[in-house]
Length: 395
Image (tube, rainbow, N blue to C red; front, top):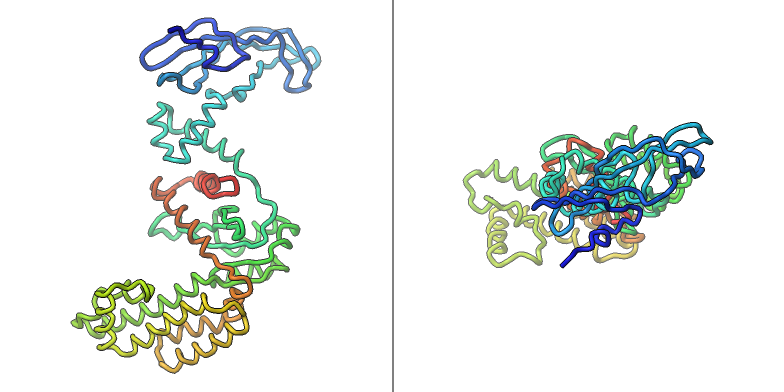
């Protein structure tokens, strides 16, 4: 059966002059069907050309073979500009060695894999694949002009490293708005100032952890924003206090079996404990009664977030809870109570609309997966584009 290669290529601007077929590839010699060209400078049409030259382009594969277009391209003369230019085609950008549709295909492949894997799979150089991904992602990731509920958090570019980047999230739409190279207060202020007063005035909710830098940025630049200290980070602070007390007990009682390997059981959701885990806790509580009291406070605090919908009622309950916590005279728990006292109003703002950065944490987990898949990115811009491509408004 004879194959209509022109139909398979579907490039009506080109006329095929010859084809070379091997087991691995198709080399298609071709030339333009167009009798004239448009000057890119003045947009005037011209039929005067100076010379021919050959240009090799990589295109989408056909029947499992790599496709190379050996294109006879013309250089035209524009009388209006008194200059020369190479003819343009709709299927390839100037100075590219890959067709637009191949670049789109490579980009989609990269979203599901790594640059290295796709370079091997498609027999392309690593930097060619990376360049394609950068160009396509830059085109397809849109600039967000407004966010009403803005969440901010940080993520380490590499495990064990202290280089953190900031992730900005639209909490209503559940997408990444941007990824910032630094998380210093000065950098954040400069970034948001560039966004302009229209963007900043539209932010109605700003949700973050308890780092003073984040809060100062919101208080300084976002006049209409209600600041919410995120539920996830408040609970994490309580967990750290409980775990610090557990480690203190272990240091003081190194031979006590009931305290060994207790961390995750102690911090686990009470209703999700299995029978063996409950027995382990009972033994630990028998040895350290105050640990049981703190554990119960932890469970009550967790339920607090899911029980109240009124800020005033939630505040009254929180006062009662902190009084109970203070009565234990536990140094580790007192540290957490001090944190609650400092951030009380902003923590209680959660109960106005039930706003949480939990969505940010979920997106952070996806970003961490991206980092693990590529063993971290030395190139921040590549990571940012990949994050926006996979988790942004158009993902």
